Length: 192
Image 1 (tube, rainbow, N blue to C red):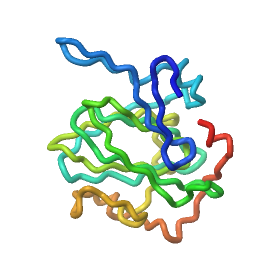
Image 2: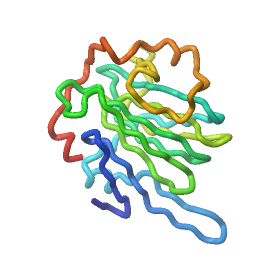
Image 3: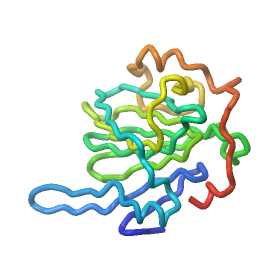
């Protein structure tokens, strides 16, 4: 599917998709449009982003798997603006045909590709280059009281880093096994 130059590629998780945005290159470098309200609406994606931020990571860093619990859950758009990362989404929505499964793809500045995650998916990545900058747009503001995560090594993900560099917070997340999800899958998400 395409809208305003945004090409979409479905993933194994309903509603989660890779986006290839319009990209223009010339002798000066590249111009990449990462968001267009009309195109996102036409694709059935969230258009109301509340916050934007970025992280810089060195090779071998794993961040995640992060999400916010209701009522502060959020959809997320992620892109890598410098370097490349192994980007991962994990389905935490009860009733989803993909519950407990993940999808992984390489996001890189060169390609300009992005990953769109509907609410109810945990997100994480592993930095594959010496330095990687990941930009996020999220549909709700950060809420410390609703901030949560799943242990990076508990969902069967074949991470590129075998001995990753983790924050204390990420190393302490509980495993997927035994996780009681607050998220519910809506069949309408499958068409997104």
